[in-house]
Amino acid sequence: MKILFSIILLLHGLLHFIGFAKAYKLASLPQLELSVSRSLGTLWLIAGIIFLLALVLFILDKKFWPFFALAGVLISQSLIIISWQDTKFGTILNIIILLMSIPALGNFHFKDMLKNEKEAFRQELKEPAKQVITHENLKSLPPAVGKWLETSGVVGKPKISYGYLIQRGEMRTSPDGNWMAFEAKQLVNLENPYFIWNTEVEMAPFITLHGRDKLMNGEGEMLIKLLSLVPVVDEGPGEKMNTGAMLRYLGEICWFPSAALSEHITWEETGRYTAMATLRIGETEVSGEFTFNGAGDMESFEALRYYGGGEEAKQEKWYIKAVAYREFSGYRIPAKCAVTWKLPEGDFNWLNLEITSIEYNQLPGQE
Image (cartoon, rainbow, N blue to C red; front, top):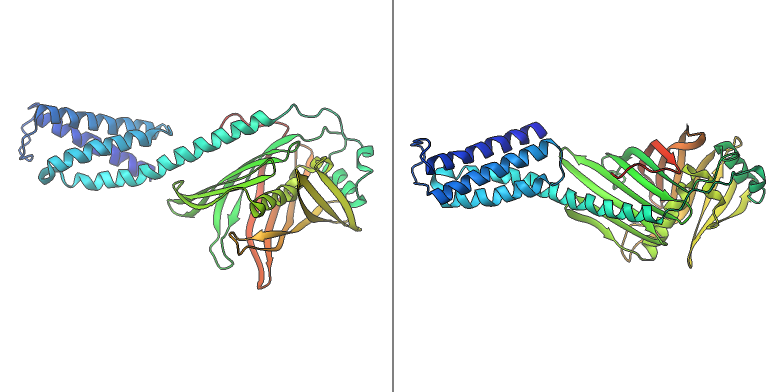
């Protein structure tokens, strides 16, 4: 697709030089019946140059290429309308360029928003804690939780203050819907509960959803756009969104196990291999139950979470199951998980994910 679009930009740009050549009598060009003034010929030249600049920027993967392409379309189509009889078929190429440029422009603004939010995230971070976790630090926890932290490898290491992960997998929006592949990146602050998660979901060839999920100061936000342009979900802070984001954060501490020692989380033993965790941010609390096995691995997390949006949303059981484990930087974590809604009409497994990379107490460079 990239090669085809590059060819279209190249050909369309070169075709505009014909109008310039006609105006300045650089060639006879009898196929162009209408006369072209020098001022219009100059505009044909400018449009051609702009399209070629857009081509170069597109090939170099510069995110601002659509601004040049759209400027070229604006000038080009104005000239085509003036010389409609001879140049009307150029409208087809302008429409193709327009259809490619507008979503790219939406993607530019979406990524610019993410860049600003991630920069704000970085500003919130403090230096990682240097105190090493010992067995003594685990004594106040329920036995199953303490054994999980030992098995995870937190003893002898500093507390995790923040992290960065990359995941991939598949998701669907309904029990009978098609699975859609996705890739996602997430920044997490464990000292002051805060995360930014962004993803790109392939719905169909050349059709993608771009999404961002966020928790900051106890408030949740979710934004999902089709082709980075058309809002599909745009939910701001509120009880349902806030508690949902907090429960997500709580369930995902299994990837950053020393977060179980956070001052924001309290634990209550509910069984030999189970414990209830409560996350409190400000005046808001959420709780969910972790289940562990005899070896000390986390097997699952479940909680009541609002399913769907709007006033009709009801609390349903939200269930995360660990499918496979892997070691990253000395920490053993559930690297593959399946997420399911336990609905009255039956289970709805809507997400399967795999952690492909995770960094502790370090972040990547600016993306």
